[in-house]
Length: 149
Image 1 (cartoon, helix red, strand yellow):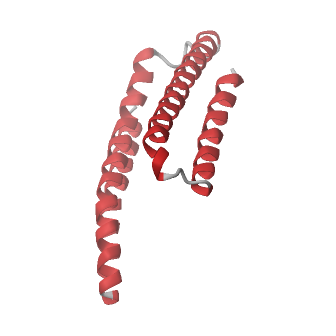
Image 2: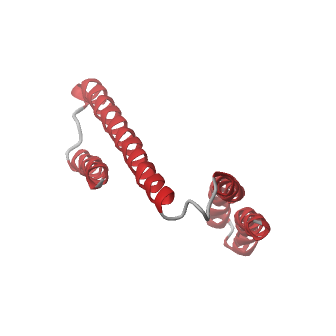
């Protein structure tokens, strides 16, 4: 079960090392077209390997969890309760994604405004806090849903 994790960690470390290498040794302009194609191919192989290892890891983890739940906890947690718990977690996931999508442009705009007008720092923090509050609303909804289970 540990080999997919080790493989994924290795692929991540190799990607970081490749980034450091190309940062320290830039490609000459004459060979940039060939190097760009090679880098795209290497990145594609890396992403496919990472996703493949992640799928294998998830399948192995699901088999382990299913084997444990059928032996030990099959009387306590039913399939419906498990799906209800997953459904209760979805508002937090969606709200977090929405907050991330909101904070990105707002943070960039706030940074640009603060650079030009330092006195606008307080107002920009308020806008970023409002966008971050979206994730809190999702968490509150999830807590309320889990209370009903």
